[in-house]
Image 1: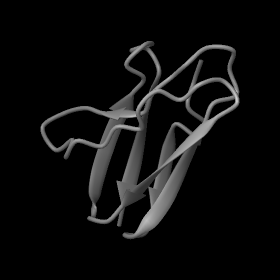
Image 2: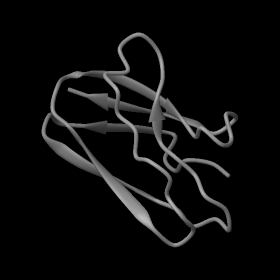
Image 3: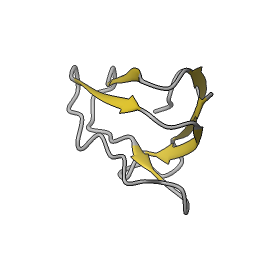
Image 4: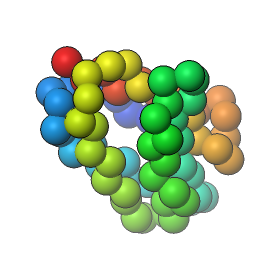
Length: 76
């Protein structure tokens, strides 16, 4: 029930894969005013979803089902 790593630094154009290794579904859903709508959708146990980060910025995200799960992708 945690994103690992909690903070990820990538270059613009990088594809980030969110893999679910838990026994319950999760999401990776952007939060905040600069969220730009990224949402992995529901990621079932044993599955993954990929999001491409095109623009520089800091993207905070949570799991919609478990709001205590949070992380950040920094694109620079």
